[in-house]
Image (cartoon, rainbow, N blue to C red):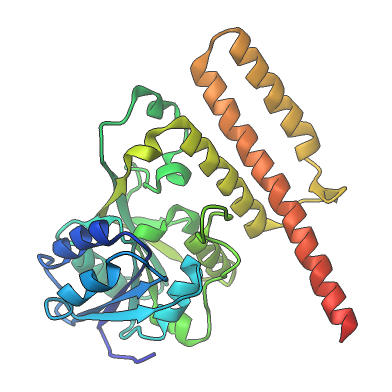
Length: 318
């Protein structure tokens, strides 16, 4: 990785979203830019659509470097892109995040003003493809569902788990020291434990790095129509539960499962039955979400157990 003082790199991974990516890159053309300069690194994670042509069309309009990572997985792609990062700040975003005009300027300003902080997160607001149905208001925490931030967050120190992938920045010195994303977590296909960027931020927090919220740095996260269906949201809950277990793995286990699941899963199942009988749709949905999270934790705990067993067998054979 190169080091150009004051410069920043925007890094994103993409896969088979050519039309959406085109719209995002169009917004980049109109961004007021930091005085110290910037570059954009886009990692194509094995796209089979027109992604390559879209990137080529912007190559002479943006300071764009295209990188190919054929191994499926967002964190594989981000790790590949880090090799092309320049400057002292790496800004991470997504191929479905549309920045507001002062996005990069505000992140740059915050990083310059708060040298004791390593991680920076901006505001993420929804960009609905269609108007959301009323039941979306039943979601207690839209963060894990739609990757949007709490609008009540004020500028200042923040818990790193409140920073999300579509709008985060990390000082490049962290990556120059060898830190990388964990490829065992995050998007890769349709079945995976969530927490691609969160795992990294939590790891850095445990090492003593601090996070700062930048409400003036705003991106709009595109919420597709298919994501406004209850089945999709509940599948998301399973992935969220898988990621929660993968990131913590601190629970006491019994028969390979966290102890609390033997209590919590029957309890949520009982709440679901009670909500159905009483026709309380909001209570039913919320209990279904919690149950799916718990089931995701259970499935990931079994997977981690098998991985460790295979690893131990491999070591024994050496």
